[in-house]
Length: 167
Image 1 (cartoon, helix red, strand yellow):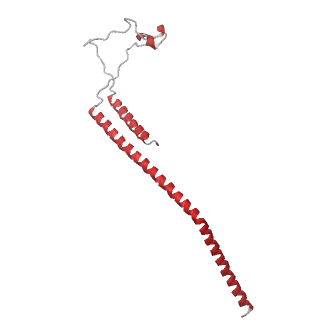
Image 2 (cartoon, rainbow, N blue to C red; image 1 turned 120 degrees about the vertical axis):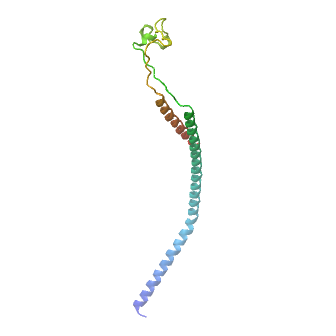
Image 3 (cartoon, rainbow, N blue to C red; image 1 turned 180 degrees about the horizontal axis):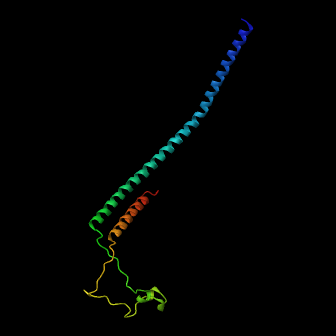
């Protein structure tokens, strides 16, 4: 066997020995870190489980709130369907109405508690058919119904939000 062949054999043996030592050290590292990895994995699994429980509870509350909101909306819609607003007329202002005409002017300091009209300062209301042409004000019934529907929708949303608040 020549010197070159002996050096190649020693090099191969040294490489195999280094590989074996590296593999052995890695096995020791894995054995040392296995309990830590197991602990982290169990803590992670527990955290995921707790989060899933909280999400399920929140989804249950949200579904319940949505169901009660849908029921409330249906109840409101049923009420509006059975109780239509009808015609609601605006009042016309008197031609010469002023704060003093109803007793709230400067003569009593504008105090709301002192807004009692003096006798004779309020005009008479005509009774029956006085012969005067009475013009009806604009009908605001549909507008009021629209406002009521919007308000009821906000009430339902508010209740759903309230029911979804964290406990």
